[in-house]
Length: 154
Image 1: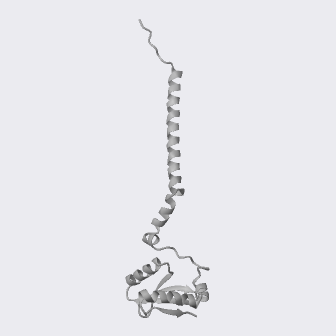
Image 2 (image 1 turned 90 degrees about the vertical axis):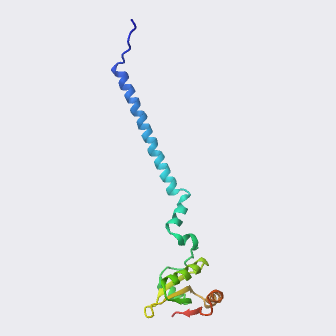
């Protein structure tokens, strides 16, 4: 008769411990892989792409315009009194269309609503020097007509 091998309890415990270690290693590797993917997406080359996509359509089409000096509007009004009135239109959509076209050209544009007439003003600027503002106004007159005028705010 052939002897039957019966594993003892210690061998079963060793096999069980080995399976647990294997599962623990697999779980650890899975977590590390997940962390690596998250870090790659957060820090990797997709970061700049996500930043432009998060800003919507405008950031892909409209170049950023550097801001000179503090972003305080009182400072800008005091130090850069010259602006160019490009157009005054009836609807916000018309003003947005004109402003987007000007921003694509690299100009700093402000759209404001006139509280009396309920019309929208599209202005370019501010500019510190009158000569610089006049030069930009001459360039805008060729595209937007003779209605483009220089405004000096005090």
